[in-house]
Image (cartoon, rainbow over the protein chains, first blue to last red):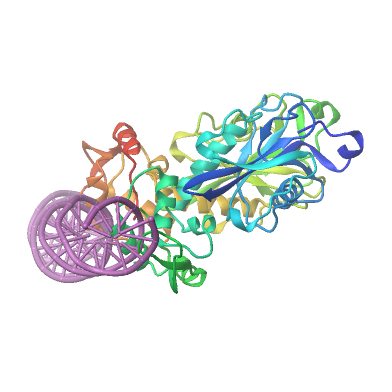
Length: 233
Length: 233
DNA sequence: CCAAAAGTGTTTTACATACACCCATGG
DNA sequence: CCATGGGTGTATGTAAAACACTTTTGG
C-alpha cells in the first residue's frame, strides 16, 4: 500500500482500504492467497491483496475489483470480516482497513499478478509468516471466521473440486478444525443431511478401492437453510 | 451527523463514523437505545447513537466515547458488527460507518442526553420506525447478530437483572428468537449447563408461588468456553 | 377454593460415539 | 497376499421433545 498521488486522492477515500483473505485447499492443506508488493514502503514483501476504495463504490465492490486487479480472480463471493482500526496499524498515515474473506477452488482460477502486485501465490496457512502491517491479525480473524462458519454452514464445499469423495470432505474438516474424526460416523452424518448428490462415477488412478464421487447440492441446501439447521461435527 | 467544522476536521477521520446498536430488555420486550439529534440535517429525528472518529483512537475506543458523550452510558462491552459502505448511505458526503452492538441491563444505567443529542430513550425493537440514513439496516444486522449469538453463547444474561428466575430467562429467549419454548425442558437444559448459581432467595410480591432466583456464573462459563460447548435452544 | 406460575417425573425417539469388521484394488 | 483406503453394521449412552402431573402462594 502506498500513499496515493494527488491525482488519485481525488477519486478515493483517503483513510480506508480493503484487504482480502482468500482461502484455498490443496493436497490436504489449507492455503491463503498472498501478493508480493511491487512498489511502496512494503516493496518485495508479502501481504494480503488489498488497496484503496473509490468514492463511488461500496467496500464489497472495491474488494472484488481489487482482487481482480491484483490477482486475476473474479466473480467470487467475498464476505466482510470487519474493520481493523488500530491507529498505528499503517505506518505512513491513519488508515482503517475493512477485511474480507472468501473460499475458492484453487483449480478454477489462474493467478495473474497485476496493478501494484509483482507476484501472487498460494501459501500454506500453517507456514505463513512475516506479513506486512497487521495482515497477520486479519488472517487470524479470517481463520477464526472460517472455523466458526464451517460448523454452521456447509461452506467447505467451496474449497473442494466439483466432484469429491467423502473422505476428501472429511479431511477438509479435519484440517480446518484441527481434530480427527471418525470415518463411519462422518459418512452417516453428512449423508443424512441430503446435501450431497451421489454421482455414477468413481475415483480413478488410485492404488486402492476407488471411492464414489459426490457433488454438493445447492438446492437442498436452500431448503434446509430456510427450515434452519445445525452443522456440528 | 453533521459535516464537521474545519477545526474539527483536523482531528477526525473525514469519511468514517461509528454507530451503536444498544439492546436492552424490559417488561418482556427487547428494546433499542436511540438518540434524537439536536442539530444538523437530521435535527429532531431519531437514530442510533454515533459520530466521528478521532485520528488517535481505534473504532472500539470511538464507539465507547461516543456512547458516553451522547447517552451517558459507559464501560460496556461493545462488539463490532461490520462496516456499512453504500456510497449513497449518507446524503452530504461519502461516509462509511462502522456498526457496533452491545447488550446492557437497562436498570444499571441512567440515560443522559449529551453532545449533539437532545434526547435519549429506549424503544421497543418491534415498534421502531423511521430511522435516519441506513440505521434501520444497521439495527437489522445487529438483531441478526444477537439472534445468532444467543444460540451460541449465554449472552442473554447481559440483558437481565443480576438476579432472575428461570422463567424470565426463558421469556428472554422466546422474545429474541421469536418462538415458544417448553418450560420443563428449558429448566433442565439450562440447569445442566451449570452456568447458573441458585440463590437462597425467592421472588417477592408476586401473586403466585414465588420462584427461586438465580445468577449467572461467569467462572463456570469460562471453563466451559475453553472446552468448547454448544448452546442450542 | 381458584388462578397462576413453580417445579418434577416419565416416555419416546433420535442421534452421537465408539469400534468391529468386511470389501475392492493396485502393487 | 498385503497395504490402503472404501464402506457397513451394531451396541451403548445421552439428550431432545412432548406432555402429564404435583406444589406453592396470593387473592
